[in-house]
Length: 206
Image 1 (cartoon, one colour):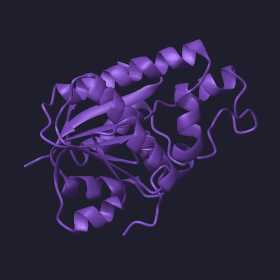
Image 2 (image 1 turned 180 degrees about the vertical axis):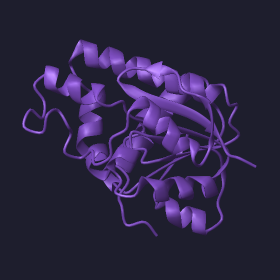
Image 3 (image 1 turned 90 degrees about the horizontal axis):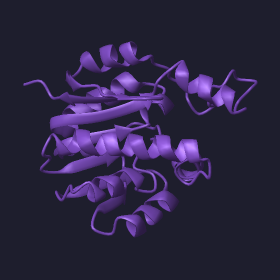
Image 4 (image 1 turned 45 degrees about the vertical axis):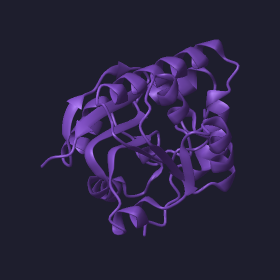
């Protein structure tokens, strides 16, 4: 089993804070991002969805609002986040679970999502190997688009001493380097522009 708690710190603090920001620019950027995630998922006509590191359920709520009606499961290591996700999306299933354990049990899902999680992991390559065992057809992944993400943090006075880098982010990808990283495991199908994030839809190779 992977010992890493997928986005645990961000899902219990930063992620919730981000989605509930009073900054109109940040709210607009996040709303646009969630719409693009929804479009990417809808285009894949998923039969079932697993979101790893689901936090408080904001992404799965956006998918429901976009018309996705297939079975959905969200997993996270934060019991607090999972409890809030159950309230936000009562029609989905939310569990405190480990992704690697699910893969070891042979569980599969048509489409697997990891939204703003990989940048928190010490071994993201190993995580993609887990995803390849969990996903039957598609994966949808996103990470901060560097160096622009850090630049925006600096512009609004966040993490000045770290030159705009969120201390919870231990991996950093440009748009091209993330597509190359994902492409080593999956077949890239779409990578829509959704500044300041890199968003990728990919197929499981057969």
